[in-house]
Image (cartoon, rainbow, N blue to C red; front, side, top):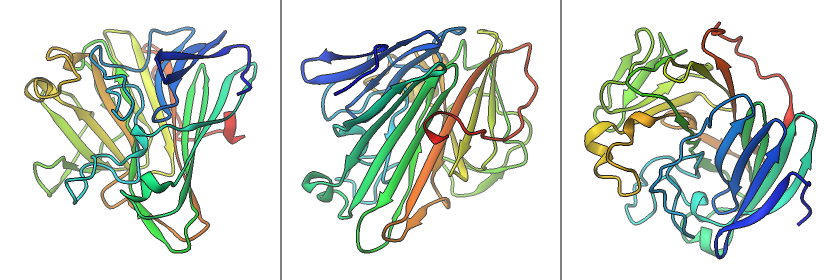
Length: 305
């Protein structure tokens, strides 16, 4: 494994390799297990991603926090014996390549179908996770149908954002869209104005727009842009559900919000044999006082240039 000088391969636990990044523009960590971006801190900011103090760091177990990859299905499977949110987040990915640039570090991890994966999902695929980490963080899940027949997928880059107090944030960019409230009701509801979190929220929005999280406690805004996605999930477990999540402290719900770049609900993707789909999110942090709504563009950078 050839790594740039600013990247080290260490073991969080025996047999659990993690890539640690120490670049002038950012520090962070990426677990090969699940191709999981665990940490990202640009040099002008506090940590941007939230990871639970009770997260389980163990082979075969998903990590609570960071950016879990949900694929090839999002949410519970119709067959309850299969894991929620797919299986790639609990499999060991391979290191493919890395490079250091003046802007940051670019990494690629890969995973292909195997006898193990075909027990859960009987199709051929190749997945690449592209990570560009610097003052901004860009994560792209590129999947190719290597089978001889078409298949349909859903998925998510299930990003946990660290916030000063979830009860004081406002989430902008989804006004005028429609959402379904988790598994509480199949009815679509209109979003009127910014989102505030004052109860459990588990909403699937039909939207391809960028989203802004205004965080007055940390005096910053988090900007989330995306591509290859026509749906966005906003989630916080609030008080009661937090007590039922063993890998999350009961009192931790004010510390984070999930704004997820997804292919979910009606936004399922069907790939013919040989076709490829890229699900991409780009994250940026700005001081709250400089908070104009960005233009919804994704200028080329990082691994995607």
